[in-house]
Structure formats: C-alpha cells, structure tokens
Image 1: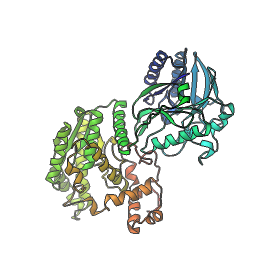
Image 2: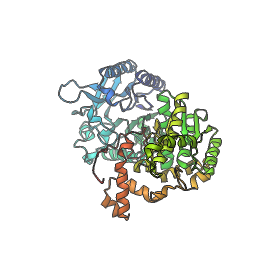
Image 3: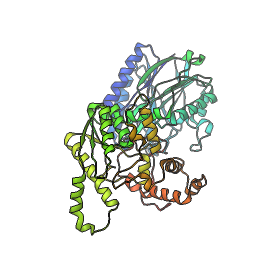
Image 4: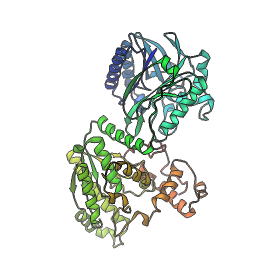
Length: 545
C-alpha cells in the first residue's frame, strides 16, 4: 500500500482555494499510483475557523468541498478533515471530523474525541466529542483514523482527558494509524510532538502516518513537520517545517524501517522561520504587500525591519527615522546604515517641531507641572501619527516593533509605539531579540554592531536608559518567563533567588498593563504562552495589584 502525506497551507474560509489545492494534490497522487492521500484537520475550512462555524452557509460550503473531493476519489482513497453536522439535537451542532473517501463514496467518517480548550484552542465551544471509535478496512488493511489531539492522551496519562480513543480502536487490531492534524507551532512543540507521537507507536507497535498543516492564520503559526513512524518507534521521515510538502511512502518499507530523516530543531532558527511565515501569510492572505516601520537605531526595530524585508522583499518595506531632540546622533546613523544594508527606502522626519507644537498647545492644561511620562508619550504618539499618516496615504501596514519584555511590563505607549497592524517580535523577550539578531548577523553584519551593543533606550528624555526604571534584561526576563510561561506566583519566584520587592513590582506592572495588551496588534506566536488569544487574563483583576 502506498500512502502520501499532503502537508498544505490552507486559508480560513477560502473554500475554492483550499479545494483546488487539494484537487491538484489528488491528481498528483494518482500519477504516483498512491492508494491513500492524507490531508490535514479541517482542511476544507482552514484552521481555526472559530465563529465562522456558527454560520450555516459556512458549513454548506464545507459540505460542497467534500462533495467535490468525493467525486475526485475515483481509484484513490482521500482522507480529509472537515466539520460535520451533529444529527442529534442534544449536544453541540457540529463534529470535527475526518472523512475517508474512496471510489466516489464516503467509506468512513471519524469524529474527533478530545477537544482542547487550553491556550489557543477552544474546540469545545463548537464541537461535540465523538462517542464511537471504529477503525476502517481498506484494501485488506485495517486503519485507526484519528484527529490531532486524539493521540495526546496515550494510555489515559493526560489528566485533561478521561478517554483514549486509540485504546478503544486497538480492539479492532488495526494495522497502522493515520492522524490528521492542525498542530500549532511554538519553539518547544516540534520536539514535544515527536515524543507524544513516539509514545503512541511504542504503546501500540504499529506504524503512524501523521499529517500536519503548515501556514499562518493571523497570530498562530502551523509548522508542518508531518511525520511517519516505523512500528519500532523510530522516525522514518519528518517533513520540512514551515513549507508545503508532498511525500509518498510504501507501507512495507515503513514497517521494515531503517530509513531515518528528522528535521533540526534549533530554537532561534525555528523562531526566525516562524516569524517569516507569519509575516508572509498575514500579508499574502489579506491581499497586502507593503509594510512601514519606525526605525530608531535600536535592536528591536532593526530586527523587525530585517524580518519584514526577508519576508516581503526590499521593494515592499519602508522605514521612517524620527529623531527627537533627545536622540543621539549614532541612533540616526545606525538606522540609516541598516536601511542601506537592506536596500530599503528610508525617510527622516524629525519630531522636534510637532512635539513643541503639542507642548505649546497643551501648556495651559498642563498647568506648569514638571516634565514626566506625559511628554515622553507625546513624542511617541507624534511618531505614531506620522507613521499612520504615511501608511494611510500610501497603503502600507504599520508593523509594531515592541518586544515581549516591554509588552509585559507596559513599557510602550498606546497610540504611539504600540500602534500597528501586526506585532512582529512581541513574543520574544529582549534577551531573545538579541539572540535573533546574532542569528541574523551570523554570515555578516546586517544589523549594525552598535545597535546590538549599546544600552537599550527609548531616548525620550536626556540620557535615558531602560535600566533607569527596569532591572537588566537578563534579570527581568527570567522573572517574566516564570510568571507568564510557567505560571509561578510571587513566592515561588522569590524562592528561586530573586529580590522580593523587585518580583512584586514587576508582577504588578505586568497585571496593570493588561489593558494595553488588549488594544495592541495581534502578536506572532512563537512561545508556549504568547500575549493574545492563548492568554486570557482579566483587565480588572486584583491578583498582585
């Protein structure tokens, strides 16, 4: 038996585009004499469709896609994910299902059992869990067909769930497993996913064909990395990350094993490639082309500009240098050097004049109070106004350059430097931004050395440095990581050796800044816990306030 994995990039709601992509792949599979071609979870709709699933017309279009794929299944088996209507009035209206189509008929439909509701997932909002787990017989082979999370409760060891679908299916003595998936990326997930899949193979001692999707859906990245396991628990083949791929496998060869190809999993390389895909798909799927960035001469805007240029092309990226009266001369020179290194257009628009105008305009209502964060924010908002004006006039999308450390503690100005259509590096702590800059420069200086080595500063008042009001980032970032990613409380963090007053001050800043994060652009997710749909913290909450 010959099985093909089709690792494709789907577009939510683009039924025609998704269908055509799958039909083209089916035609290719037939030329390769494939017996079964396996697509991903909710391939007809794209994942995650969220509240589009509440539109009856949306479900109708998914059903039409299945009808077209059924017609195309002459002389081949097609496994494809799509929503199905629950015929029972009790329970949710839909199932998250995998169709097995063959010879222009529906041979089998398996619904998803384990419906995740953690982090970016909210599947139980829409879907009814499966209560029946049956294998399917095809060309003399019995197949256990599952969907994504259904393999993540190996032997009922995951405390989130009480059912193990594969344990139930093993009563039918399947010859191999097929899993259709939409498994999001984070920099740990590729390795973790392999271990979970290997645990299934080690438990059941049969081959596994796992087809994941790739592509970005706003902030969520899907990295692909589809994988085939031999029954001895070794990786037979792992498909590339972040790109579409199509590969065919002879079942007998997979059972025999011996071949081994696994992808490298360097953290910063994965992050780099994930951000590129996030940028490409955000612009491409929205029909956008051009980005604009405020370039300060610092490391955050420099890294953002490099990533945008690599993703969109130098002809589609424009940067604006907006020095204030407090900006150092080398900041302007560093920004210019970067723009020239990248070959992108830059403009220099000083903000001293608008800043002075606003100060004069507001002088009466300021009532002679001394310089403070108010004046700093006026400068940041002057820059935001300039960037948005150019974006509106020339059809650019403003890219936000804030990092996760700043986003966490609220060191950003609403309607100023927090403005933008997409937050490019806001899931990278400052120390990780430095590591990404090192990766960018590994084959030669792209980002000027001074942008990396100089002390970080917003340059909104004389001699300002980030360390004036925050601890050094190599102290701050571990505290933030323990609170945000590891969910440790203040006492637990203090026991790790951190100063009590500092910990309480930092965590208070994080919680008080929640209202800002609710108003900022979507954040490209690369960590296990990004600011956005996967982190739901109340704005008006008293914990640590």
